[in-house]
Length: 72
Image 1 (cartoon, rainbow, N blue to C red):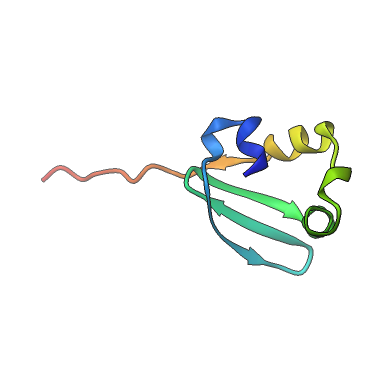
Image 2 (cartoon, rainbow, N blue to C red; image 1 turned 90 degrees about the horizontal axis):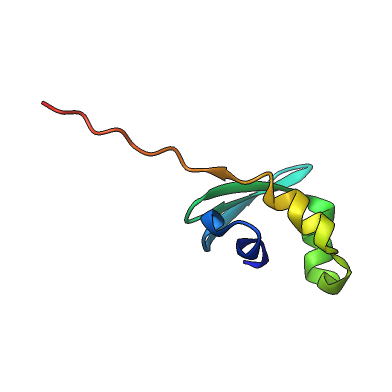
């Protein structure tokens, strides 16, 4: 993923869910909610996405919650 350069915790792409106004992208490290307009821009004309936009989206990354183990 292009955003791993800005935040190494993002990890690799696992899947996505398309919603009405955004796309939730799941990664090995967590997830990011992207505006649909940015996803379309990535498919149609990725070179027009500037560094500021990538930094902004990378800041939206949320890590997965670690599963807590129960000790018996």
